[in-house]
Image (cartoon, rainbow, N blue to C red):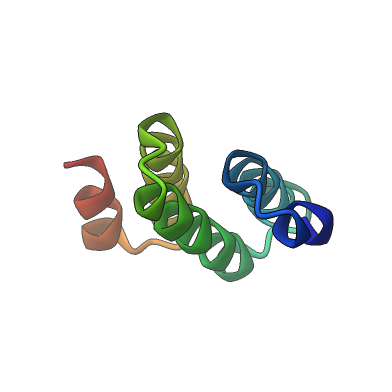
Length: 79
């Protein structure tokens, strides 16, 4: 991630953020850290008009919020 940030490669940054978020959510069961990474991913993807990554971030955020029993937040992601 740091390497991609250094060279300002937005597409690879969002991929790395997604992978890190998924690792925190699935492997470490730390949903809040996963949400933090997915939110960052979504922001960078929106800023750089990477539509497929915005969609992926929203799906992953929805799943993380759902697993945290934050159903309203999850539904907002799926709208």
